[in-house]
Amino acid sequence: MNTNKKNMEFCIIGCGRLGISLAVFLSKQGFIPRAFSSRSPESIERAVRFCGRGKGYENPTNAAKTSSLVFITTPDTLIEPMCEKIAVEGGFDKKKMVYHLSGALSSDILAAARTVGAGTGSIHPLQSFAPYEEGQKSPFKGINMSIEGDEKAVELGKEIVNALKANSFTIPTHAKTVYHASAVVASNYLVTLEHFALELLKQANLSEENAYEILEPLIMGTLSNIKKRGSINALTGPVARGDDVIVSRHLSDIDAKLPQFSDLYRLLGKHTLDIAAKRGEISADAQEKLAALFKF
Ligand SMILES: NC(=O)c1ccc[n+]([C@@H]2O[C@H](COP(=O)([O-])OP(=O)(O)OC[C@H]3O[C@@H](n4cnc5c(N)ncnc54)[C@H](OP(=O)(O)O)[C@@H]3O)[C@@H](O)[C@H]2O)c1
Image (tube, rainbow, N blue to C red; front, top):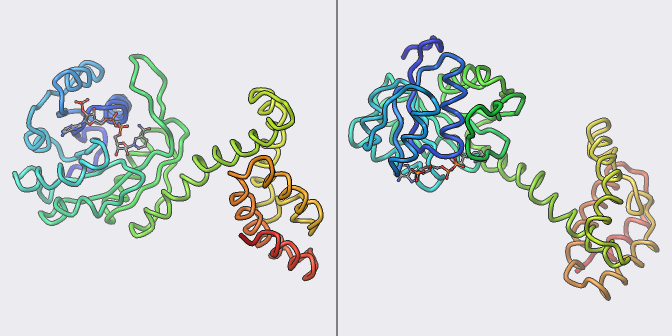
């Protein structure tokens, strides 16, 4: 495999949001787009037009044969069957490096390519991508991207991420699922948590918009404290103080007014109590009273 990125040729299988952005910004950095394949001819045509070079292929195997670097950027469920199809049809060999960009799946789903000697890895941008628009700024610049896979895939992956002006970090292949779960908790479940907070404040006759504006400095301050002091030391509030009387009042009101959130409050309280206990600042008696309140 040619590892000089200045003339490294690549192909994209799946010309959607990420596939086209990746092709455009890699080609700006000296990687050479040779081939594009997708489900629809229109998407292939867009990719070729935006990159200004490369050729469209109806058959993904023929596209893969053109380049040493193959990115499979189809939807997640199609990556493994696509990889198997290309491997069976002879599109991969030991000179190829094959990547996918899914956050939820590891490079293990590229086993069919590995079996015929290709290097395999996954590179995941911790960012959400909109469809590429001509002339737009790079959505990769400054973002964090995880890399896992075999040794060569990880090394080349670092060069690719570096060329995209993003920051790379490596994770073990077996940890891909917990890595993705972490991203879901940090982003999606934070939304759920703030939704709960907004619903509570709406009980005080505030609109959702006003409620968010009122809570925003508290939310941002908390995030800043986590960054400065770590999650355990950032904890404040009634559980951290061991105040079971206040928590008991919260629960009475939530049970009466927003019972759909009662379980969530108790479960979060239980885990918050674990953090407070780690700090060792609340008495055993307070811990026991709070634990009893958080029982379902
Ligand atoms: N978008 C994001 O925010 C984001 C962020 C991180 C990671 N990712 C990962 O990036 C990968 C691609 O996601 P995406 O958001 O770019 O998806 P997307 O916009 O839906 O693009 C996927 C492309 O795959 C093509 N495709 C579908 N079936 C195909 C087939 N049978 N053969 C060939 N091509 C086919 C589609 O083609 P046509 O257009 O031709 O119909 C579509 O353009 C996924 O693994 C995803 O998990 C996405």
